[in-house]
Length: 254
Image (tube, rainbow, N blue to C red; front, side, top):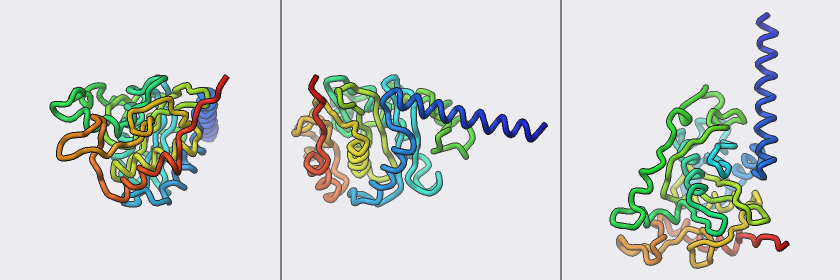
């Protein structure tokens, strides 16, 4: 009897995993294994941070979590708290990007500071803690991560979250990464989106008309209003070159 129950449980888990994978494919979003492999490779590159392992979360256009992955060998190889932050970043980039305008979480840094026009935005749309802390720990970062299939919510206003656009220019959702400095997080997210071929960005607020991080804060003021605090010269230099090394793509003409 116990053996039959165990077999049934295994079958249900496998079926659920297959359904999640097929649903992601149907949404035009990358599969778990594709995200994980790409993240592992990119973390091994120079990104201007501390060289730490990372979390990445993908949400669809409705804010539903589709995949949660980590780059280390175990869920404890990267900051445990960054799992939820990565999901929060994905939710933010999706929630505040449009079919014709992409805003990265990095773009929201200066404009949400006290006395700025969007101050308080970071306190809206709180994280759904029931989703964030549900389920068995051993499933965290697997195909069956407990957040998958649920809306996580949350607003994060530093680097690491980017909207995802397919080759037709359709916004599919967003990706969020966390686990290093916020500036390195942005660089890693940018490279990851590029690797996943979901960077057909329509327009942004950066000087290169995309959603790249902007380093234009002098004192406490951002020249553009969309600036981000610099974390390190190395991260800033990498970010400045991203439009050349990993340029956003142009949507296919009909």
